[in-house]
Length: 351
Image (cartoon, rainbow, N blue to C red; front, side, top):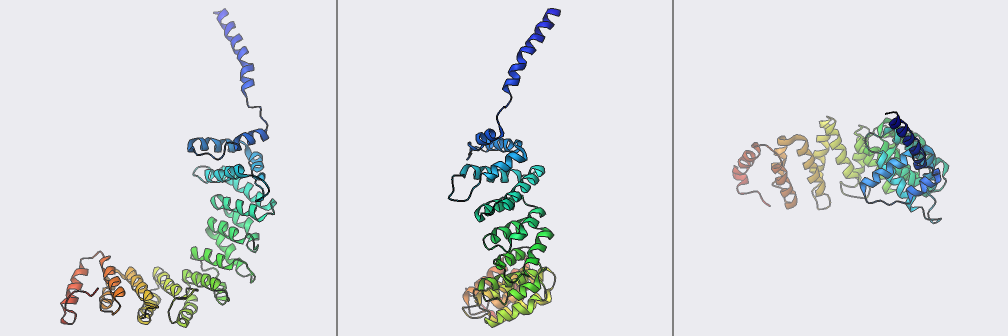
C-alpha cells in the first residue's frame, strides 16, 4: 500500500507541469485578435460561446475591441463591428444585467472619446439595445448636434421612462434645434404631454415636416390645450389632406380623448368630421371618424352606421356595412332587418 501511495504521488507531481503548461498564456491583444478573427459567425451555439469569451476579456478587453472601430474609409474594421453588434444583442438578453451595465458604460465612454460622427452613431445604435437612464443623461448633449441628433434621440427614446421623456421635452425649449421633428415624434410615441406649450410653438414653424410632428405630438398628448390648435389647422384645410396631416391629427386627438374618458370632446370631433367630410377629397376622414366612433361605442354606434348605409358614396356605404359586421352582437342583424323592413328603406343595402 505504501508503494502504491508513493507511485500515486509521483504521478500527480509528473502531471503538474502539464497542467501548468496547458493554461492560457496568451496576451490580451492575442486573445482579442484570435476571438475577433472568427467573426462573422453563422452558428448560434458557437456565437454564444464567443460572446462568453468576450465577457471573459473584462472591461479592458471590451474597451480595446471598441477602440478598433474606426472612421469609414480609413481601414477594414468589419470583424470588430460584427463583434460589437453581436455583443450588444447578447448582453441585452435576460439575466445579463451586470454585463449589460458594463457594456453601456463602455459604449458611452467610446462616444465621449470619439469625435467622428459615424463612430458616435455606431455606438449610439448599440445603446438602443442596452441603454438606461445613464444613456439618456449622457446623450442629451448631442440632441443639438446636427450630425448626431437623430441617433441620440433614437437612443434616448429607446430608454423610455420619465428621465428620457423629461430630457426630450426640455430640449424643445431650444429654438434652433436641428431635429425638432424627431424629438416631437419620439414624445408622441410616449403620449407625452410634458411639452404641450412647446408643441404649440413648433406648430407655427414654416417646415411642413415640423408642423406635422407638432400636430402629431399634440394629438397624442390628449391635452385640452391641443384642441383649439388642431381644430383651427384642420378647418383651414377644409378638413382635407395635406403634408402637415392636420385633419388626421384632429381625428387622432379625438380617439385619444375617447381613451381618456373625455367622450364629450371625442363625440364633438367625430360628429364634425362625419358632417363636413363629404367630397372625394375628404370622404376618407368621414369613414375614419365613423370607424373610430364605432370602436368607441360598439353596438351603440348602429344608428350612425344605419344612417351611413344610405349615403350616396358607395365606398362609404360599404365601409359602414362592414363596420357593423365587426360588431359581435346578435342585435346587429335585428337592427338591419328592422331598418330595411321600414318601407322607406325597402330592399337590400346598396353596395
